[in-house]
Length: 135
Image (cartoon, one colour):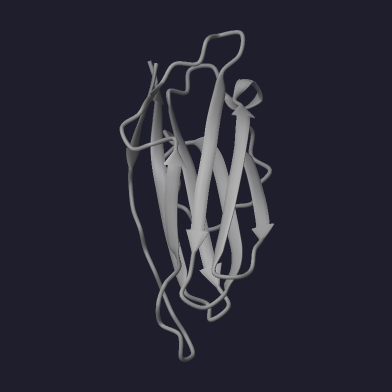
């Protein structure tokens, strides 16, 4: 069983536009229980990014969470991690994917993060994440 909880939202800004972009995570929903079976553990991702001016980039990562790490940079080659970098534009963009977790689940690791970051053209930053626990 996998449970999901929201962790954080942060922002920063520069130049004239000080409004941070927004991240709406539709799937997995907060506190949603995902029950992947052992043969086919799938995680549905559905995310909407919005900004008052112009979006620039989004980063999405799934990785182990119980090693005491700090989020400094998303794109990594670590074992048990999936990530993607998206160039986005306009005032709204969406991302949807069904992620097969099989290659990313590590024996003995029960906590994972889904970490999402979005920046706009002015450099404003928003981050959010979900804690995913295997039972």
